[in-house]
Amino acid sequence: MRLFDTMSREVKDLQSSDGKTFRFYCCGPTVYGPAHIGNFRTFVLQDVFRRTLELSGMPTYHVRNLTDVDDKTIRDAEAAGKTLKEFTDFWRDRFHDDCNQLNNLEPHLEPSAVEHIPHQIAMIEELMEKGHAYRSDDGSVYYKVSSFEGYGRLSRLDQRELRAGASGAVSDDEYEKDSVSDFALWKSRREDDGENYWSSPWGEGRPGWHLECSAMCREYLGDSFDLHSGGVDLVFPHHENEIAQSEACSGHSMADHWFHLTHLLVDGGKMSKSAGNFYTLTQLVEAGFSPAELRYVLISAHYRQPLNFVAKDKDGKESFPALAGAGQALQKIAKFAHVLKQQGKVDTPVGFDALKDVTDLGSFAAAFDGLLDDLNTPDALGQVFSAMKGIKPDELSEVEARREFMGLSVIMGALGLKLPVVEEKVKAEVPAGIAEMAQARWQAKQDKDWGEADRLRDELADAGWEIKDTKEGYELCPKN
Ligand code: AMP
Ligand code: ZN
Image 1 (cartoon, rainbow, N blue to C red):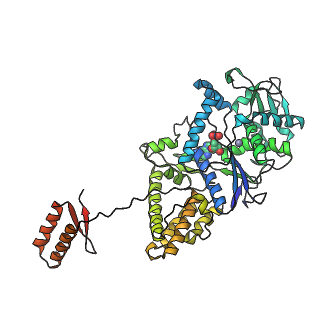
Image 2 (image 1 turned 180 degrees about the vertical axis):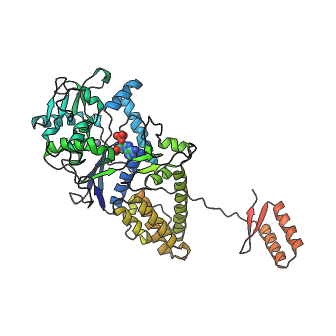
């Protein structure tokens, strides 16, 4: 598989460094409220990435953390009068529920930041020993950005921009540090932190956000691993700071590949709570759409292109046209898959793991190639519809139909799209007397005995049956 790498600015082949398993880390959600559909653009595409790798024959090891201690979680837990754990557990469970509904595979490991504070403290001690960190008078500890030569390599921002924003948190400005570009590794305890503080060699306080990911990456993936991912807003300062911390400790390159996902916009603008254009999965389900329809919309654009989610029409009414379109597209694919399945006499459900054994994707091979080439999800969807156009299911043998069905299933498995259930029209059992009457009416029509034909039609109607003339003859339907 090939994928764009933010560090080298090139589309590069992906390889697992141990030759066995592709080991990667995704920055997880900050659990202080419901994740919005923008967050899910990132999490869903990371899931498609993992599914594609696995279906291409590369096992993965996927670590995604929970940010359950930071400025926002502490601020909002305090405001809600809850302990940090009660508060973040609630939003963690809600996040898991949304992920399940959207059909995301669970990460292999989901470490919690608050459970790794000793690891973070150990890392700060190492950074201090190596001359990359210093303690300020108030007991906070800062990373000395000027001590790390490679700072800015990932984001390629110029020195002025770097100086302006390395800390990435406005509240850092209130702490005492040597240079504005230095960022906090440890934040000393403050009154409004409530009971949310921990002991450290520098006094009571709590870790900085950037450090949490560095410590958890190191613990579970080692000093170097295959890929690190997050939304594009994390390139700077979060990932730049992670690199500075991790590489200053280990002396090794942190990740071979950096995978960043472009943001979802709403009605052309940045999605934010304050702008009131903040959508959650629950809201869209309440508006009558399915999680699969949202997933379809989220993967309908390439991950390096912004995706504009149109919510309101020109009169300001919420109409979500893309979700309605996604529903129709999914129905079309589902009906096609259903016919192939019947024709191929596939009678057992095919789970994700079984799809890993499929080697011949038939007409759907080009769709999978699209995914292998820089995770081109819109191309893969386009290829699915082209392949469907080229297949005449009723002309296929059982073996051919089964092959096409499995090929289509692999693409749906890679995209993580669960198809809606196709409702089959159940043919009503026609009682013998009714069938005879219908046959007699048809004969009367052939004999041009219109009076008799009408009489039999009325008699059938009285018995609860409607007769419809078709090109081939006639059809009997029970009247509702
Ligand atoms: P957070 O919960 O804010 O830590 O964010 C979780 C993930 O969602 C991170 O990888 C962010 O970069 C990503 N993210 C935040 N906003 C958006 C957006 N509008 N579109 C896509 N990804 C986003
Ligand atoms: Zn992170």
